[in-house]
Length: 169
Image (cartoon, rainbow, N blue to C red):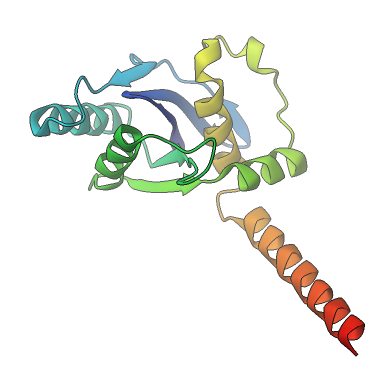
């Protein structure tokens, strides 16, 4: 299975390509480290960006794209241009596209720590976020860690509600 990890930053999509085959992780050569959209407010530039991503998917026979999810509100919220690029990528027909939030990514990294240090991958430092999200997707493709995380959150919520009821009585 080949996964393309993407981290959106401004008008750029930083990419990292990973492959998992017969119990081993591979880092195939990829012609792109970063895809740029000159002006996300221009329809033609958005179409060109989408075609660039689609061509990358086609050329490298990528099975899935995983985008590092950004917050919609708050101090660390993503910008409007980044959300436009995210939407354009999600609309691709030739590949499955999913988002992964940082909490899920951290839970997966805790359960399945990386066997190789990022500095040994040969990738550029700015690709680390894209690499980590792709690695997380490959180590937990069925989302078992997220499912367990959601159950734990529900359990804590029930416990907190029960404590509040006891305090009110």
